[in-house]
Length: 224
Image 1 (tube, helix red, strand yellow):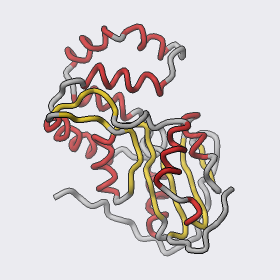
Image 2 (image 1 turned 120 degrees about the vertical axis):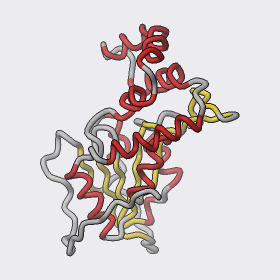
Image 3 (image 1 turned 180 degrees about the horizontal axis):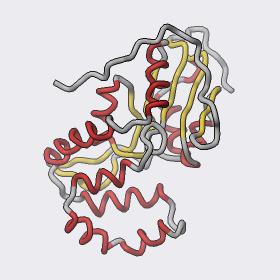
């Protein structure tokens, strides 16, 4: 898969997708409905209705729809209000993580593996989730200027080839004995291709086997 470094700073690397994988549903759309009023959503949604319809007809790809939807919904929203709501939303998502994949993530942590969440969803609510889970984050980054969301991204939508690119930019895979990756859709294929052990939700029957250790349940730390 890739040449191995002699340093082995960490034995293994585990890469987890979020929507549809660690979290069973679509957190991005859920964030819109959690933070914004129905009136705002309808008013803004009508302006991009042709693209919404094309998306549901599978004529407009998700990686193009997300930035357009985010820009329409969140342009000009005060950042402090959004960050407060994002903290609340993060707590809600944490209670609904897939228990099997969460246990797999925790087992990676117990082994001393480096765990990174790699997602096309935005850092506004993923950052607090990763802080609580004590894992690292590579994701789409929302732009904030003068205390307000601009509606634009500071990075490309972190999906498909961008996932692979961002991983290779930030991580040296030769530092690891093995790379594990967990995803659920075609947007994760480029990330899964980097792995020695890849798991696709809905296609693979068994999770990658990890060396058995004496497993102790890890407590998710609670924010102060």
